[in-house]
Each structure stands twice: as C-alpha cells, then as structure tokens.
Image (tube, rainbow over all chains, first blue to last red):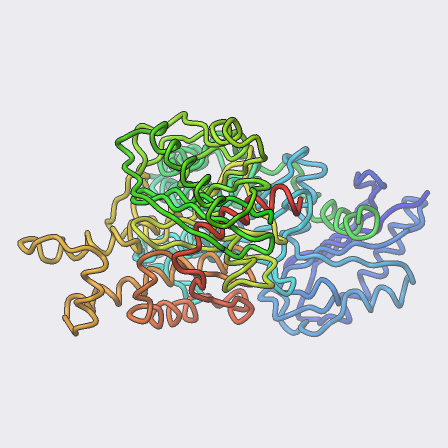
Amino acid sequence: MKTIGAVDIGGTKIAVGAASEDGRIIGRVECSTRPESGFADAMDRIKQMLHRVAVDTGSGFMGIGIACPGPLDQASGVIGEVGTLPGWQGGNLIATLEEEFGIPIAVENDADAAALAEANCGAGRGSRHLIYVTVSTGIGAGILIDGHLYRGAHGVHPEIGHQIIDASAGSSCYCKAAGCWESLASGEALAAWMQQRQPSAPPKTAAEICRLAEAGDTLALEAMDREGYYLGLGVANLITISAPDTIVLGGGVMKSSPLFLPRAIKTIHHVCTQVPVENTKIATAALGADTGLAGAAQAWLARYARP
Amino acid sequence: MKTIGAVDIGGTKIAVGAASEDGRIIGRVECSTRPESGFADAMDRIKQMLHRVAVDTGSGFMGIGIACPGPLDQASGVIGEVGTLPGWQGGNLIATLEEEFGIPIAVENDADAAALAEANCGAGRGSRHLIYVTVSTGIGAGILIDGHLYRGAHGVHPEIGHQIIDASAGSSCYCKAAGCWESLASGEALAAWMQQRQPSAPPKTAAEICRLAEAGDTLALEAMDREGYYLGLGVANLITISAPDTIVLGGGVMKSSPLFLPRAIKTIHHVCTQVPVENTKIATAALGADTGLAGAAQAWLARYARP
C-alpha cells in the first residue's frame, strides 16, 4: 500500500504519521521536540519515526508532507527565524528528507497546512474561500481562495494575526503595532491581561484562566468577555475585508470556545453590517489533535497530486 | 471604428465617453446627476449622451460598460440602496441599455472599475494583486487577484473601508462599527474631526481643511497628521492581511496627498513588521478625472473580451 508520510513539527512535540490518498491518518507516533538539541538531532528522530511508521502501517511512502511553524520558505524548505524553534534557522527540511527517502517532499506553514486539512477533511469541507484561524499562544491563519492556498507578493504568507483592530487599546506586541489582534485575543494576551489585573497573584496560563471562568470566577469571566469581544472584532474584519464562505477557528484557546464564542458571534453581528454576514459560516475546527498531520498530508497532496 | 461605450455614474455628475479596444478614452460628455429626478430620467440622459458620443467619435459601440456606486448586483445590473442615489433602488442598468442598444452591457461597482482601470492603464500596470483604495467622502476599494476582480461568497463586493482599526477611538459610522477606517480617514472623518475641535467655527469641507493646512494653519496641520496616521494604519492592515504587490490610492482626498502621505508611509513602515512591506508598491492613482470612464470600459473588456 502506498501512503503519504506526514510530519507535524511544533514547539513542544513532533508528530509523525502516514495518510491514505484520501487524507485519512492511519498511523501516528510522536516525540518531544527538544528544540535546544538542534535541527539535525530533530531531523534524525523524524527520519527514524518515518521509517517506523512505514513498517507499522506496512506501507511505502509516495511522498512526505511537513507542517512547520513559519517563517519558512515553502519552496526551498528552509526554516526562518521561528520563535519556538530557536537555532533551527537555515535548516532545510526538504533537502534533509529528500536525501534520506528519495521521494517528493512538500513543506507548508502550519496554519496553511491546517487550512488545507479543515477544507478537505474537516469543518470547511466544500468551501471555496476559507480562512483558518488558529488561536493559541499567538494568532496565525491560512487562507484558501478557490481551494488553493493564497500567498501574497513573492510567495509571502500573510500574517492576519497582526492586523490592527484597536490602535488605542494600549496593548503591545513584538510586531511593534499597538492594538494588533494577537496582542488582544491570543492565549498570551489573555494571560497578560489577567496578570495586569492581578499583579500580585501568580501568573496564570490561558488554560488556567478558562478553567477559573468555568468555575465562575468573576475576573476570569470578565477575561472571557474581553476575549470574545476582540476575537469577534478580528473575525468581523476578515468578513468585511474578504467575505469568505467559511471561517474555521482552531488552536488551543478554542478548546474553551463555549466560554467566549457566543460573545464573539454577537460582536460580529453587531459590527459587520456592510457585507452580508450570513454568507459566512463560522465553525470551530473539527480535526483536533490530527490537524497537523492531516495538514501535512494535504500540503503534499496539494503540491503533487492536485496541482 | 468599433469602440466601447463608457458610463461613469457619480452622485454629482454622470460622464459618458467612448474607449478604444486598448482602453484609451476618445470622447467625453457629461451632465449633472440630479439624483432627485429619478433613475428613468437619468437613464434617458445617459442614452442621449451615448448616442451623441457615438456620432462625435464616428464609432459604433461593440458594448457598453458602466461604473456605478454600490451596493449593486453586477450580474443583473440592479442598483441597491446607494447613499448618493436615493430613490434609484431597483433600477436595472443592464436591462435599460440592452433594450436601447441591443449590445452586451457590463456593470461594475465604481471602486472595482477603478481598480481595473489603474491595473490596466494606470499606476498599477503589470500588477497581479492590486488593491485600489478611493479616499473621498467615504473609503471604498476594489481588489484584483491574479488580474481578476476578487469577490466574496455569493459574489459580494468586500467593504475594506469598514475594517475596524481603532475600536477605542470613539469615532462612529453608519456601519455601526466604532473605529472603522472610513470613520477615521475619509474626507467626512476629516471634516467631522475639525468640526469637533472648532465647534463654534463654520463647518469646513475636507478640501478646505487641506487648503488651510497648505497655508500653515496649525489645527489643519494637526488634522493632516491624524489623516496620515489613520490612512497608514488601514493600508498597513491591507499589507499584513494580504501582502498585495500594489496598493493604489485615489479619490478626492488624495489630491492633497503631499500633506499627509509621508506620515502614512512612515506609519506603515513602523507597524508593518511581519510581512516584507518593501514587496508592496504604494502609488497614487494615475488616471485622474478619467478613472471612472476608463474603469467602465475595462469592466466591459474584463467581462466580454478577456474572460
């Protein structure tokens, strides 16, 4: 049986699997990323895991797809200065695996890969123009237009998470733009706001704040209201600017979406009056933990099987 | 000689002309719009002007293109509830001219038509992904991707002018979204801000404020600084979200661009750090008073001669 090897590189763990030609994940192993061990060490582990998955699933790979955080040159496979993978800059994902396996390799920004996965196998099936937004530590996004990944001039991956939505809000971001979406609605923004309101309390993660809100904590509930408002403003802008047929919201923070999504939807309906908001389906991601592997496989299929 | 009839409908005047197959405008007449006389009356004048232009230029029309403010169903030719054309709602531009001339008619939102014109004959020649922004009473835009007009789900024209850039700024708009681009950087926003700062002075138009700034008036210069800042924030978002190769800025307010464009460019370079801003050319519109007619002709060419 021929399958597609799939590699999902994250700051915390690396997952490796195999996917059937219709994109189903049929085998999966994982290991800690340990970015500090360096690019070459991680690639050795990835090669071993790929060989093991091939044996476990009794399959031969027709190609390998990789999803990796950006910045990243998806044409050459060279990693840029990735915040969660310090020291990996200049490592070439394509060249390393091509040398080992001698088959076509495709590399994609992780948010773009997730957009392909949700559009082909997840919440966005049947969409022609889909925006996938991952709300986790930061906010990333992938855009599909007419079913293909959208890229800007010179193949650039847009950075929707850094659109400015509230320039006077006083939030700050490493991007230097005060009031960008990521600085107001990401997991880190949630944690920073809570810390600012309770400077003497121990720092809390976004997940901890969500658990407090579930338990009825007043300040955490206020944080959820703020999260919903700013998530909604950013999504509203995507509708106003591009009127996509589907927006899929994924990422770690969205696991707690019942706490703030209703507020986001209310905000969207309030401010989005110039394009028909009912034309855009707003959905939460459907693929869960397999999004990265499914996206890696879809990135390969998009490049080599559905050009 | 065969030409394309071109009709440019604005809230103040209607221009009618003929364009050669390469898009050059070779004849031009105009009249006041007088929207209050109603749709049928205006269409009678448009028909007469088209016949006159055909005679004057010694040409027969192979088709007619129309640029008209939206909302507008460009497929059917039916006008929606257009702020500057009250009472025209439901009027059918295509059916009316098809009946008179028996040739193919194309209708386009005026900002979309201007985008086609600047991309094909103006400041955006050679661009594949261009955003044309008109900064006048309001802010409108047209988007070209791979040389074609971009439309959202169900053919919707996006409304970039209503993206939210400063939700806490306290500005308000008919769109209901506080802090939208139009409410902060349009000609009307400029006039409203000045009025707020000088409540006892007689109201000034954007053009008057620009003239005062040219003469060195301190408050008018402050208004120019604010105009540049907010114009820059909105343009920066377009780059961050879509990394186009070209952004063309046109419309009445841009006639005074030396007063505020340098501040806008500075703002863009300051806040746009996550996508390479140098990949996007920022230009002022090149076609001037002929933009509407050239856009109308290009709308027809896009629909019938370059499908």
